[in-house]
Image (cartoon, rainbow, N blue to C red; front, side, top):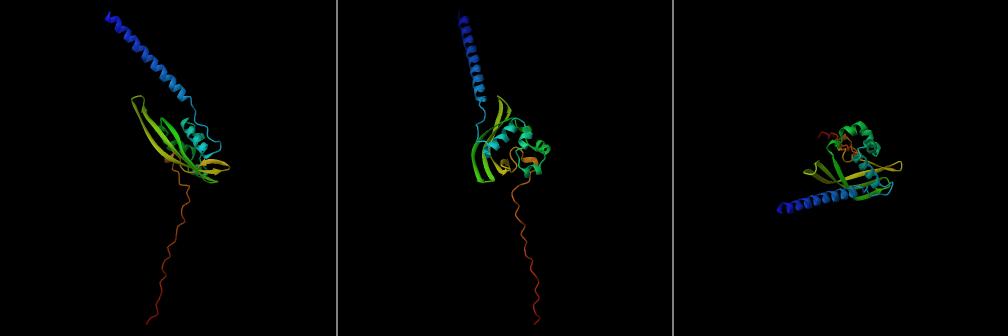
Length: 179
């Protein structure tokens, strides 16, 4: 009789494990089915979202197309592909923190990025950081004006205006009258 009762316990535990597995699959399907929040079309936030979605979907040509002219001049598509840190990225999550339209041609978008590394479920780590995307309006569209994450290593040059060199006056020798 005790063997029969323990058999029922095993069946009950097995059924509970199967039920938990089904619930977790259902939750992940429902949570994963949510797409990114719809942002205002043509906004700086939407440009950053399109860039990051292209990176996430490994459509690097689409991500590169969202770079401004100064960046594409400094970095070819092949440089963009070769030097960005795509190989270290497995998955990431992005949260919009803040945005600011500075003037009609410049905007800033701050996002919090959480990158996940390792092999789930036991070897998973994450790194969270905030980064700023600087955008400029070119031909009516918002594009990234400075080296964006994750393409920091592309050899981008800064698009901030370099200060004009200041000349230091050189003293002119003066001759004093002989006394």
